[in-house]
Image (cartoon, rainbow, N blue to C red):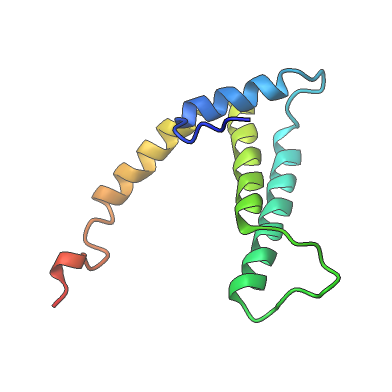
Length: 114
């Protein structure tokens, strides 16, 4: 299986939409997806805590990767956006513009450090 690592956000949204479109059930309702997103974020937090925090895994716990959990979060986010007709590329562009303008002087730029 060849994996294309050069996909745009729109391509990711289209790919998820094609996958979900195969099934009669379609997308979950927004509140169900929010609950699922919360569950996936919890799983991501648990993995980050195991790797970077004080709570290490028990020997009986299954091995999972942070990358896997981030993929699950991304999938649910894309599902939620698709079901609400939200273009995540536009959403990203909007938030980046906000950070470039509103927060432009909030952080110390590397070239300004002495």
